[in-house]
Image (cartoon, rainbow, N blue to C red):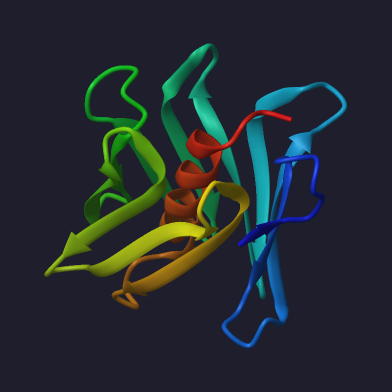
Length: 157
């Protein structure tokens, strides 16, 4: 996952291991400077990610492919630990180190493994995504995991 432009974190390209462009995540209203609504596309899957309540960044929702996933901070205004669920699957996403937002992971015997870390230390424009979650975990939930990482690790430019 990498920023489309070097000077903005509003548009992201999502690549496969073969480095073929496979999808995108982008801010819906770049001109309005509203960072609460996003759109994604991965192959045939499309959907939206939005802040669930105005002026409350503690809860987000992803919709697409007839599924809804929600994310909520475990402790209010602690954006380094999230509970993410689609109603059937629930995981906890957190930074590996409290003072470093460049490495995030979940580990679940039931649902599999997901990890995101920067490709180059200190460069928040390029991320490695290791998605070994169960095939039963829907795309909106997977996209919400990736979104939370890049949204809460990067500046809003």
